[in-house]
Image (tube, rainbow over all chains, first blue to last red):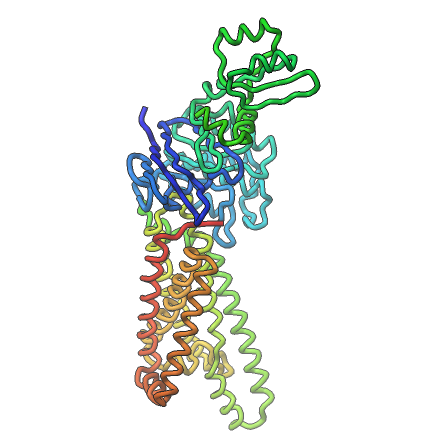
Length: 296
Length: 242
């Protein structure tokens, strides 16, 4: 495996605000990589830095082995679809799809036409007059049909209905398996995309709190439920991500359990259930900072 | 394909904002002007009075709209097309060079069209009513290539000054514009003060008289070039933000 993106000790400050705080990670070639986190966590800033649209305060970024800033060799392989993408004055979707092939050598016009039909996009209408969902579908179509070796989708489906989002997930998976490439998808609809993602990078307040493949993230926490006294006894000495109690019943979310620990818990009459990625992220990003610093 | 020319093509993908809309508005201004000239002439009884009025028609500022429109085109290119193109993986350098090429092509095209209209205006004796819009007195009365140069240079001036100012906005937002216009105001007041203190209005008038319309057009390429070069460097560190 080769790394398409290598980030080391990357920091970006806007005045007093540290939007990206000493972040390091790598992205392997031909993976679908999730960039997850709350609003304002630093996801968009991070993608702007990776695509050379913004400038790092310190640290290093390597994309295809080189700095992306003003680097046509790197950026020629990159497509960046933003949630708040601006379009030129009075453009229609037709103008967008006519010009896209000039910038993406692997652009597939037939595929773009099929996607336009799938999303029922009115291509002749001025973009200003489109609904939020239709606007998003333009970006999604460009991102898919461009077949850029490195594609960034930043919250690509704002305003898209459930059907359109499902079409996006299905098309992305299909096309990705036929034309492998590296996709970075930022979203807060975490559970919807969790099946799609191979690796996950969760950031909060500009710092990486999870960077792992999806399988190990899913197994990394378990919810334990039962009588309050039993649950509390079980939780002693463990890293507790989250705790809830109603009357005599309590649930705790704890970090990874071994097979023996699981068996012991079940013997003690406790119920175990997996934690969805979304719950895990909610709990990790709500927890006071010291708790997840211990886990790091 | 070359990414610089791809950016140039991107500016031409929608011809409405750069050709058809300004052409329609310019045509409407011309028709309205012809109507007004005709009304004025038909209200005057004497041939001498009509000749007087027609001389006054020569001081028309009706073409000003088209130049301002092209300045707005340049501003929108940086405000909207720039962040759009960056999403396509275009570098700032390639965007600026490709856009500049588009502005030069548009200046030549519009310069040619306005020159042609100036000739038609003269051949038809001012659209039949002695009106002058494209051959107004300050556009001079030289050879066709001098006229073509004047109009092309004027378009280039408005495109590149618009581009330069727009890059200030893209880089520093409202602060950049406020700072720039404050400095510009200070500079203008300073120049006026200098002229007044040295009793120099005569010298200024003389400068315009000796240079003539075509000389002034040539000189206007200097601020246009300064704006174009400054815009390039300002854009190098600009970040598209929402």
